[in-house]
Amino acid sequence: MKRLLLLSNSTNYGESYLSYPKQSIKEFLGPDVSEVLFIPYAGVSISYDDYTLKVAEPFLEMGYNLRGVHSFQNAVEAVGSAQALAIGGGNTFELLNQLYENGLIEIIRERVFNGMPFMGWSAGSNVAGPTIKTSNDMPIVEPHSFNALDLVPFQINPHYTEERLPNHGGESRPDRIMEFIELNPGVSVVGIPEGNLLKVIGKTVSLVGPGTMKVFHKGLETKAFSSQNELDFLLK
Amino acid sequence: MKRLLLLSNSTNYGESYLSYPKQSIKEFLGPDVSEVLFIPYAGVSISYDDYTLKVAEPFLEMGYNLRGVHSFQNAVEAVGSAQALAIGGGNTFELLNQLYENGLIEIIRERVFNGMPFMGWSAGSNVAGPTIKTSNDMPIVEPHSFNALDLVPFQINPHYTEERLPNHGGESRPDRIMEFIELNPGVSVVGIPEGNLLKVIGKTVSLVGPGTMKVFHKGLETKAFSSQNELDFLLK
Image (cartoon, rainbow over all chains, first blue to last red):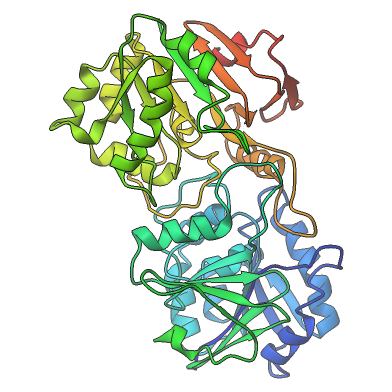
């Protein structure tokens, strides 16, 4: 059974690192997992070691050891034998680039489709969709392809917001996503606001958090959904 | 002699379309140009015809006819015989995608290096650099390559701002550009704030507008420059 926890962001503004999702992560991983394999590839201005240390701290508080995939001799084998996988945020293009460079796309897919718990935040959630075409990030490197892990059939837009900078031009987030669906009919985009996450357990999808998420799809009205709504249609 | 006018944006917040750069465009094109060839490929939520009509209006007020490249039987020949070229804003990925699809990269380069005046705004300025890796846009389509027109040796970040949405996470614009230079040492990035433009005439570069632009380069201090500063170093 597929098990995914897709977080909009790691940390709410002004809170401590990975604080808001702690309870959800604990419930998601449960007592059977003792060690989580961490993929720090989205980190650009931080070393993989430093990034892993930063993430290990809140995971230890939750009762889990966390180890960076870069510390293993063989990254494919590390994913192959991981109890659970976490992919951190940063730059989505560099993350996907390194997933290709390290040959991890297929093994992650295989493990997730066979039930290994997968969690990601920000860029780490972005790559769970079919492509990275709804990333908010700057395309600072050119990955082999925009095709991503395709663990769910819908696109994710993390850090979703409808706010705009005052007196500043350029497109709003909904404008940008409307452009995506214009050129990619048939694909849904889920905009998840900060402080919220999407949980996929088998064929069940639910939003966890106080916010409302938006679903965009060409030819359909854009709709808002809360944690009270049934979201399984997203997998169909 | 190379002649480029690279605008941060088309329109300042609250002003009429293409209003702030009118005087600069008139001075740049001069009295010898009567018709401008317009490339509307960055438009996604607007038809090429509607986009061209919208741009033609302020150009007519400046004394120039404007015609969309899509209205010609042969786009390559249209660029080949154009008096001057203008590339409009919108989505940078779709713009570059269509430049490749329509086979226009080489002919634009050839004409610009032989003196045809080139102007662009937003996405249209972005593609004047070596790559589109410092675009602010959502990667809604995957172009053949991130390599762009390479008319100038530096990267452009249009709509440059250091503002952030209040109480929202995610990277600031300077953070994103610092990540770019981390992975792309040796390449300068010029952040041009809205309401400003960069003029390149032969080996001379100047900023036109009331703002200050920032230049980022790995290993060098990030510096601010105004219209009073000598900027020819950017071409070296």
